[in-house]
Structures are given as C-alpha cells and as structure tokens.
Image (cartoon, rainbow, N blue to C red; front, side, top):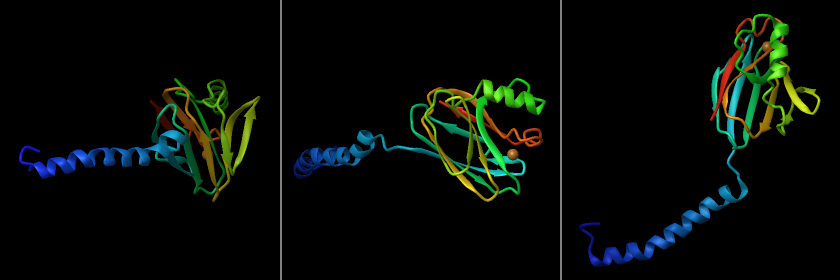
Length: 164
Ligand SMILES: [Cu+2]
C-alpha cells in the first residue's frame, strides 16, 4: 500500500466492496443453512477402532461413519469415561447409565440399533457393512466409545472422543 500509485488506490477502494460482497455471497449458504457438517470415519476391526482418538465440536452437526472391516459384528456406543470397567456386564451397565445419546436426536442409516426407552443406546454393524450416525453433540467433555460384545472391549476395542 505504501508504494501504491493513486490509480491503484482507487481500484482497491472500488474493488473492496465488490470483494466483500462476493465473500458474503460465498459464506451465505453455510451460515444460513447451517450446512457445515463435521465428518468422522471410524473403522472397526477385530478388536479395535481406527483412529482410537477423535474430536468433535459441540453444537455442530456431526456425521460418524462406521465401517466394519472385521470378521464379526461390532457395536458402537458413546458414554462417560469409565474409572474401571473390568467385567463386560459392568461395562454395559456403565455405558447405559452414562449413554451420550440420552436426549439427543440421532439418525442412523444402515446397521441395527438398540434403544433404551426413547434414547439410542447402541449401534451394531455387521462385518463388511457401513453405518452412518448423525447427531449434534450437545455436551462437551471427554468420552469413551466402545464395543461391549463379550471379549471385544477387554481386547481393546475402545477409543476416546473429545467434544469441545
Ligand atoms: Cu466388537
């Protein structure tokens, strides 16, 4: 700017509102429709999730795609970080008690689901299948996701979901 000729300054002054208008037009569909979706893909294997550490933003629609590349079915549930979860039944109880999806509107495309009352509790994905889970995280914190099928959690099929 310091070396600009008067001509260049004029162009810049006239050009700025046009550029601003163009930026606004580009941004409008995103802000107006809330079209931003945060997408995550979790691959399920016998017996782990990849990646095992993921992040989501609170208040932004989320889409989690679960791909089962294992030889057996796997579950997906999100719950509070457990202090200790040695036995499988304890795990299921904890996951149910602290189920992240409580009070959330959740859409699941593909896969089987189990409900607890009005709330989605777990999603079961068959080998070779893909399931998409859509919801808007309402609560921030550090949570665990895991598969509570006998032996799977114990073998390490779990991960950490941080919601900010
Ligand atoms: Cu599993």
